[in-house]
Image (cartoon, rainbow, N blue to C red):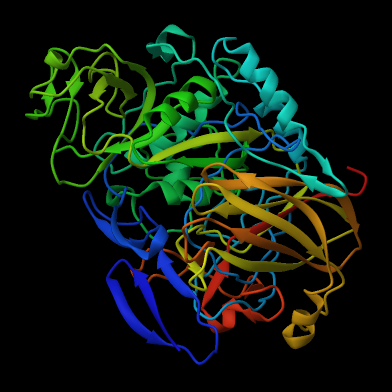
Length: 582
């Protein structure tokens, strides 16, 4: 049966031998060089061009979750994620203290391969280490409930707190992730006036705006309670991608690095710009949730800024540094607006807004007033000590929107099992909005299964998480049969696309050396490939490892295929455990 595979070079025809064919696509937003773009499949099967974020830089520090609550069905605090349309089951490796790979399972018919490695406590990309910092997702949830908006919106925070706690419906644990409703947003809001302004960085001549923007957004989510400056060198040099610092990057690279517990590390441990990144550094935070807000949804962006932290977004600019001139930039008012067909090539962080900012402050005639307040990564000599205004009418601002909604201490979990160190590269499915995927892992010791993490590839995703135990070590047909003997551990809905760590209702005690599987049934309205996968797109960028996991894909939860073998990919699905006595 035929299938179409989408990658950065465009669609090509491929033929599979199986009866059920899955569709694979490239993740939106993947692309190299300043204005590069890639084709991706959107809900409803329509093709749309997504712009890449790879190019030279913007300052940023990853934000932290912990400020968004949950609504509905006693949902438990988590973080809101953003859904996309990818997915593919792949072998799951183990990331923990020693770094262990997993074995490959079987999943759908199409897919794309991608080696994945494991990150460990050292936070090194390139290596299949294991992230082992213990802890539990529940602690995160608690932090995420209220918002750091200077003590404002008490009602919203109370609602979040209640929703975050999660609950059971009958005997099924339900965990939903939504932004609180009814938040009253001011007409203007500025982190600089609220004690939430992150440190401004300077990328110099390197193409590291993507890393600066990510880490600026991340650090802003910790403010005002905690001030942190994370290492851009480590993120841009110690990841699983084959790009030099002068070749740019994009937000999915940041997500993969952070969610794989490869970092972040302190700036003081790995200073910027010396061309060196030391071995053996350990992550100083565990990022457990990253949400992707809908394109041009300015209300969602403002809510995220107000309640959580800075929103990483992107622009098109011909400027290279603070000394550059551009017809789109008014140096007297520090205001920027581009209207046209060029794709984004520079990342910045939205840290405020002003609905009444005069349209006359821009170098072109615009329909109305209003601007976002953004940080840049060109030092404090640019704009208002590193800040500038971007018109609401700019073509690209607010199209790609990343917010770091849950950032935990490193003792939240003892261990993470994973096989997708390159993260969400593509998506897979069976031409419908529903699919099943699974990853199998083997424990290192007696430990409690606490949570599972996966991507929602678009809005309003519904999920069910199951656990299968005592899988045969050999895999194959016997493993596929074992996947049918599963117990329902959690279910819920996710408002936005993104990565979510979902706590399980029952903390299952796993035996030493036991092989178990996390199984997810996912339904994302309007998509045709709802499962996120890691695979080698053939562009020489991602270091994908297909030997470190055992992933599966299924149309109905009954017939499974091993994706490493049949689709050359890994599914993006992680498991989090805590030592028995931890």
